[in-house]
Length: 566
Image (cartoon, rainbow, N blue to C red; front, side, top):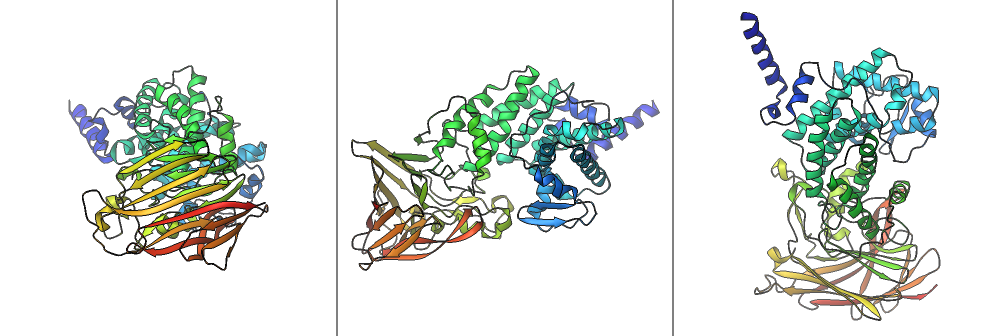
């Protein structure tokens, strides 16, 4: 009896030490309990999901010689462990600990690359057992590492002895267990969805994890139903999130098939809906429009995803749930942001760009937004999210959204506190044009004004007319009698501009020889400096056409963009 009581006390203290509150909430407790006692978990992996991200075998040689290039930083380890080398940036450290670079070693397909991969994985495991770095266990990093290890397990385990195999299996079991605990404690937003993808994949790959797989598949289906909207957009409204999800969901769908297990219907439906939505964002040059956190498009990843689109669905034109509209004229494309702000947990990458648009002619982008900087330029992210960084109207140099700042509660820092909630859209087609009118209330609270934008694109695509106007909100008086505002049109960095003598027109020339004219009758135009965060070379300077005026003198502005040559 004494031994039994002591055992119970020891067990209770062990539970308390790990903080496994999910045991009392019925969250997959049989697996968690078995892992806690060191008795459960898979003894081997049955399948290895495919990693469909682009791999570069030449990077394997760099890694073997101790050079690790992540997030714009190259680090030489000088013969030391990369996991003991000081990280030049948090983004570099996260990329290292995520192990996505293992795919480059697998692409090399040599005995040396396999031995190198195994040695680096073992190095990380032993380092984490001795002194774990907190950033290695951030949910997003832990999720990517688990997915990478599962997909690259043939590379890691081929030729391994039984001692390493046991060490590896124990580590991935531990990672899945801790990720499962964090999932029930504090993971929200899109990170929660990616964590569930990783855990569902772990349940499929590991032998004897049927109960866990069923539980994670159920939770994954529910989360997909919550985050992937009816039109295929993601609730956070970032086009890059769709790319990232499909890069993980497509291999997961294959893993279900390989195990002979029915995939959650929400997973299959989400993939089918996201493909046309992804095509909605594609401009004439094949890249994705720069809205709400989207930066430079990875063309190889995009091509890989679209190659898996068996239906070859046409681009979606109207996405009312995600809040985007696409207009086409000839070989020209216009994409417009017509969405309200997303829920707070999903708004940390959302921009204040409501009613902004991007426009391409054939394979040349003309009107753009500034885009989102990558992790190496995180200090520029706040400026990139402002309304002024988008091709739309900015009132009184104020963004249409308010973001939580450093002095506010941690839960809302970086997230949208207020912004457009009512966005109305009307569109119609005629023989000679496609027309759209949209409005948002992002300036109603502070100024009592509604911004409305009307666009008319000719069926040939060579003539675009627009009107931007400010009107008092229905049933209210404007809280300002006069206010400065600017209508901005950011131009692609490759374009050349010239302000004409009338100062009401700007000539735009493309590298291919096209000539376009932007004209705003009765308004003096200015060509000002802009910035592009999405060029292949990184941050680049560009031009923007700006109409500066006042609400009192000109509550509306009319402008045209039309092709004159080339």
